[in-house]
Image (cartoon, rainbow, N blue to C red; front, side, top):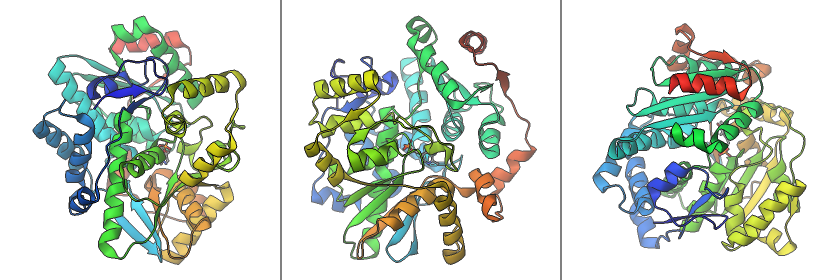
Length: 462
Ligand SMILES: *Cc1c(COP(=O)(O)O)cnc(C)c1O
């Protein structure tokens, strides 16, 4: 399998080079050159596979023998052995036609573990095989940092530095990142916002001499490995429903920020999984909802919400969808992205909007509605939703159609966002792994927001 850029200016590269490249060198995003097409027989055969077996089959299609099958199997098995639930991503029924796909049973209680446990092991494997050093640099609003650190802590050949906005992540998120003792982990708490952290990272990666000298690698959701890992649970969930009943149409409702998770669903559908509708659930930062309804892609004013991992105005994976919307025409994508950069807005023509609306439905959830959904499901179904999942469930409820099945992706455990849950006077008991964090020593360095100061810390660390 070769990988190409959505902007068409990178020569086709293999799987491992695509992982290491992260953002394509021409500023685009890497996508597989051909999307593997699954026959009905293959789908039927996959129905009885365990999560790890299924992941192995799916990765095999994309890795194309660059990693021997037995090595790949080991990587996959190691990545999902750390999950607390035997099913890895169990599906639970909430009420008639409404299910949640629980993606939070990994080490940091958020869905990002599914991709980052694998990516951590993969980086470690590549480091061993190529005898090279991997230095990971990333910024986080909370979940990605904790997952990425957990994915590589203590691993030889890898060092990781994560920037987070000082005292602007949830308490549990802060503890998950900063109570890690391993010497290959550096937490920099930046006096500023998440946007400041992200800007610093972007500028450091743009400093090509610095990037190459220190072997900097990215872990954000533009990395194609993350998308591929996330396609697996769409298949897995679909098969679990098919086990249970005569499934008719199955819809997935996806709490969306950077468009990574929902793009994985779109890819699964393009591979041949018979998904009926993908529902794009946003919070009050609803640029993507407006895009699906009106065909206009234009950031609005930033809103702080109860679901901070979805507080995103410009969705970094959106360009991957544009590439397919425009029939894999890299020139058209380049023109659109350039127009967006110059004018801060793009409008797609009516025929394209029709395609978008056939691919997705969308619903933006207001802050009060998010909390109302948490209360309702707690009272009526004795199920505690985290605020991100609540956006997915609220959108699924809103767009439900009689006789169709809705699967809302549950992207985090409610214990990670207790500050919001408490607003509805709901008391929860923390899982023991989270409770234990409160007694641990924290390791973090508080820094100002200047690039030089961060560089100085990195040079000391690497
Ligand atoms: C990252 C995250 C999301 C958004 O996922 P995208 O792939 O960025 O769309 C939703 N919920 C939680 C809890 C997250 O951590």
